[in-house]
Length: 125
Image 1 (cartoon, one colour):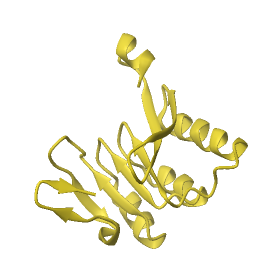
Image 2 (tube, rainbow, N blue to C red):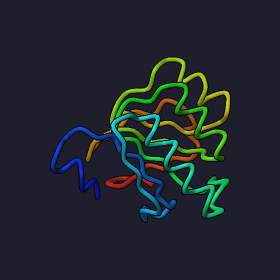
Image 3 (cartoon, one colour):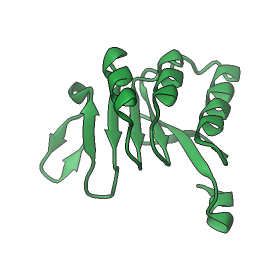
């Protein structure tokens, strides 16, 4: 899905996924914050906010500013390839946002909002 990243390796991406895993929107930029701003902008223009039933997927680390942007967009689930900062975790807890980090094919860390994650043998939803 990250066309430019495949050629350069120098972009961050953020995607909005449905709760069923369908990619709804994807935006890229050299900066994590800019990628999220682009995504929120397109969601706003398409009247897709608040996006409380969606998952924000981030290609890098999670700063507290990214959690603030998600909260303002009504997004209550963030999943990231990288680690969240301690302030990001505090902000996620304050806004009742589920935050998952160090996301890999077979593992992840849950930092907040465990109630939105159901894990059963061999799968997680």
